[in-house]
Image 1 (cartoon, helix red, strand yellow):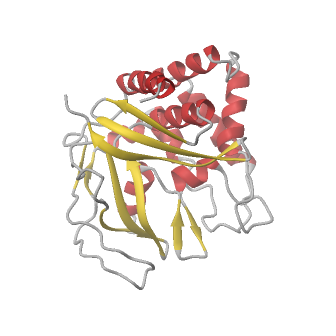
Image 2 (cartoon, one colour):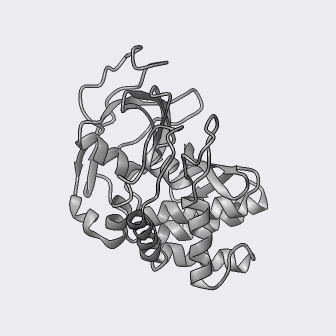
Image 3 (cartoon, rainbow, N blue to C red):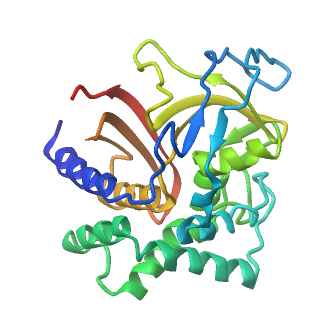
Length: 282
């Protein structure tokens, strides 16, 4: 592991240790992995051998916490199909700012901010820092094939998008997955593994999976499960601002993970998500 990755790993471990709103597997939520997903190219190529949802239980009291409430309020603010221009209403802009206000008060975002200031990557002034976060995550831009602003880092990563109505892109957040599954909009098709990836574990916080959503298919998506919105926001912001390589390996808690973080015009997040490389031996 190169020195910069080692330093970032120490930061991510600190974020993890201070993620006070993280849910506990088996207690605050339960997932049912069931079977391994088959290879699918489209909705019509359906090899779903899974009989039950991924989430068998979530203690929804957690959603009453400030950052969760602010996060969930943003999930219905977007037009999912790329190519459809986004219109941000004044009410939605207020909700965006309310979410940022809620997370910058948390231990994880305070730790991330302090580190970014020390590295001269973020302003020390909180208002200016919030403006930086807004630009990275919420400013609209045009995705490939679109001539008008139709996407943002937040929409892509946390809410999910569809391309051509048939392919799901982005969608790397467990809260959105749970809420959409509860509404009957998600069909979980199984977990995804390859020859090099570890078997998923129902008591761990990272997994790769396959699912369908809004008539589109996500052949393989990778997500954290049970973590707080502020943990993911802090982690991905750190990786975006500190690593020009767009892929960084970090080790923390029980996990060795590659964080993929693609930039868009060096100003916005194009996509970002975790890939589980292996479980660390304690």
